[in-house]
Image (cartoon, rainbow, N blue to C red; front, side):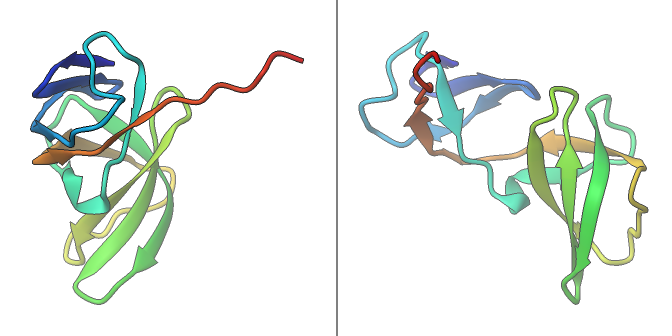
Length: 110
């Protein structure tokens, strides 16, 4: 949800950055936020935890697919010397400068 022109409330907390202008940026609007894998930072002792459900070796980094408590998935790049296993909980934090948000589209009731 949009809080103001610099903040979005997410499942992972409040993210502060520059909202990209558009029709979806009015306060209290429910939106989808695009998080890039490099926006999700691995932090060993973080209180935010997500379950590793997949990983792919990319040379200097692993690309982890993480499942949040809600079931939503995010991607995270982690230096390859920090090797973690599928099923393990990974401490994370968000560090996003640009916050691309999109109008949330809902399916018609059936």
